[in-house]
Image (tube, rainbow, N blue to C red; front, side, top):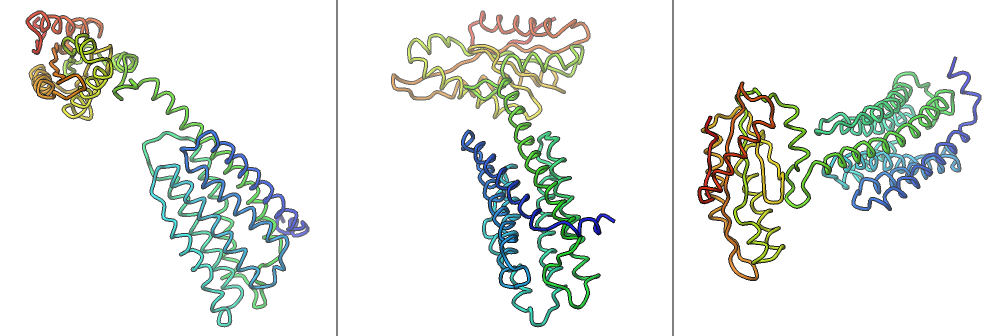
Length: 384
């Protein structure tokens, strides 16, 4: 019923609407890129939509019964879809292979090179199969896990699934149901239905692409709010939020507080630039020594904290000692001489008698104070 109804619609109108929609999204993506020039995936989306828009315009102006003109438009469409695949790969920070564009063009040309031996139905089905494979490649990139929570990627996947279903129908039409005298591009109700599906896809894919980028931007802003810009470690707010998620009576959780000794003296003698370098070098030491599951934060000017899950008091002490010894041997040259670091650390472990993490932090802080009071450059354990 739908196909019969759509058969009365002039395809050129739908081709034109789709071309305009694609051009509009190409302009929108370009405007976004002007504000985010480090995000190259916007340029891929601009190029993809612009090329596809040109493809639909060519459909309007050409004689669709002429093979050479159809070859041109199919090459343009295949290139546009390939650019969309590359846009998705670029968005997820995956390597792109530009040479694949040329391979796709060669494959699209193959059936036309042997057109004297093939039916129009076979050529039609083969070209649509290439389009289908390209869409499947796009879908594969969207569903591959990458560690990000981006709900809009699933809306984008649905939009591409609609187009995939349309190309499946065209492959079946070309290889299974086509009459012997089938045209290279049948002007029937199914063509109009597929152009309508394309219209839905263009709007949905453009909207979901922008939404997906927006979701990532929000996530990045939230992450930046929890990071210390100088060292790249988590900041005090992140440390407090992490503490709030843990059970203070979890006896397997250890806490180390670390403080760079005489840090003000480093700033006064060598300058704040040297102090910043010292903080960055010490942060690198922490990231090198501690495990992935450990939570490392800079919670003050020269004060750091490390939460160690599934760790005994003795193990935490050994970690702190490794940090102390490494920092002691990590002197570096600055314009005014050699900068040497030592650190003091206090170690505490969660226990059933700890009422809150405030108590636990206070005990670690007491241990740190004892280390400072006993001459610095040492590690102290809180003694109950």
